[in-house]
Image (cartoon, rainbow over all chains, first blue to last red; front, side, top):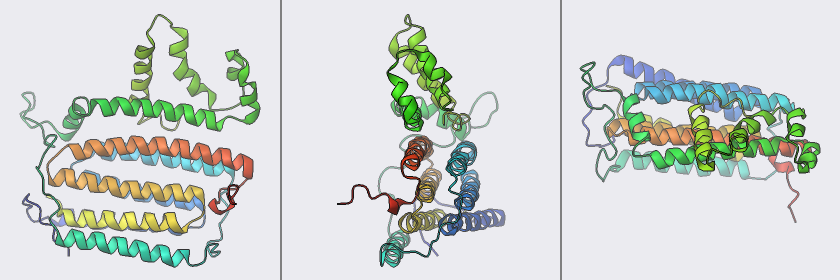
Length: 255
Length: 101
């Protein structure tokens, strides 16, 4: 169907590969249609889980084992749970009438525009040479041969090495981003009554308040306020690295 | 050896299109967020495909960052949804017309 002329020669795929791709493609498409089509937000969230699992299988199929694990843990385990939590919390799990079209002609227009975009992308995929620059800018997926095992180090080791060398600055920036996101979520989720009391300098107010999202802010801000001997940047780095290291497992906690 | 990259890229394009249609058509803010997640996943699939085809770990590193940004975006976005729901008791995007002239 699609001829992608890339310089890397690919051998013929075996039938398990074809089977895995076909099955996960079906799962992905059905899940995506479920997200778009279901009128109940809970069903949409569960369909989203389906799609995410399919994508994770395709990650494994393409030698991205670590990303597949992160995909399951972060997306299916944290983000979708967060979605479900908000849906249940707000009580908006009743059905939405999808037949009402408030903007006349918007719906067919959306379909036409997206069909044009998809057609363009597929046509570009089928006809053009995608890769014009150098291959392998950052590093190979399989690392050098290690002495311990006699086999090349896998993509997990390579990914870790590159995250902490080539992408070190971006990695630190994601730490700051996560901390800012946590603080922003806490600020947004506060009730107005508590934010009025915010003027009081006493931290005991915040601790005794009934809002469930106060404790992450405490755990983030405490190292800075409790230990003045520690320099501010150092404690910030500690908090940031904690946020990133725990990003896989703690995504559900701060909200 | 898995299938050629064209199949994966085509699937990613299709997934992105479904997400885009959902984002344009649906009016529930929560479902619009989920459609954004679909589009991000399509981009991730493209990244991983090119990482495999070009034998470059950089594509996978970028997927890692996309995951982090997606998580942060969902946190702040859902915080805004919750805050807005407290004020207006709705998650339908069409009901948010306070700034309409």
